[in-house]
Structure formats: structure tokens, C-alpha cells
Image (cartoon, rainbow, N blue to C red; front, side, top):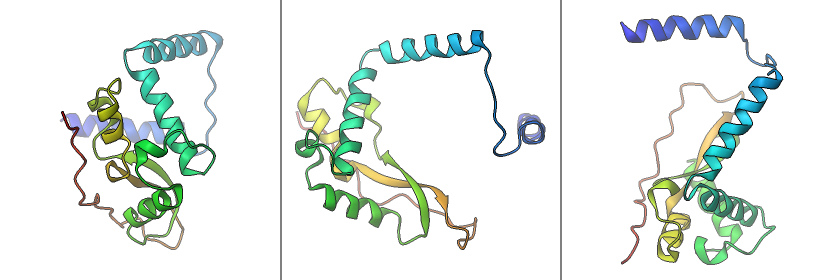
Length: 151
């Protein structure tokens, strides 16, 4: 019953807002969104998590060195590792994902930070495939287990 209602809602939503449709917010909605974002970022650990994720992404593209100790390899080796997790698919765009999400770690402790942002805890999640690849391609997660924090 619930799945049927959800399916109908999704169909209606797709008709109202086709792919590429620009949704605009009014001033009240924008203010509510900003307030919600401030509340989210003000939660314990979220600011630290986002800052460290930015450092890792900067390191990945070769612009920063702050995350080198946490990642445990060079930025070129990290890119190679992430490309291997895509398992040879023709991917146009991917996102950096984690086997164990950073929220599961206490990022105030250095041991947990190093375990969380170590390259073995990261994989590339495909977002957009090239047009030549069938939409039925599935991507199993890499079989490497995430590191556990010591101590």
C-alpha cells in the first residue's frame, strides 16, 4: 500500500518537475533553508567533518597537503585507488563516498580521523554514466573492509 502511494507521488512529481526544471524559492523559503543549514552545521562534529572532507577533496585534486597524513598515500595513488573502485565502468561523474561514514567516528580524536579518512575507507560512487553504458549496470561496493580505530 505504502509503496503504491510512493510510486504515484513520484510519477506526479516527475510530471510537474521534469529533469532540468528550475525550481525557485521565495524569500521565506530561502530564509528557512539558510536557518536549517546553520542548525545543521552548528551540530556537534558537523563543522569538523565538513572541514576535513574539504581537505581530502582538495588533496585529491592536488591543491592541498593538509590531508596527506590522514589519507595515507599520495594524491595520485588516491585517484588510482578510487578509479579502481569504479571497476572499469565508463563513468562521467562520481562522488567520493565512505564505507563507514564520517559521522560514525569521533573526529575530535586523531586516531579516528586517520581511520575515517584513510584511503581504504573511501570509494568512488558513480553518479553519471556515459551514454554508451546501459542503465542496468550495477556497481557492487568494493570488498575492502573499513579500518577500525585503534584504542
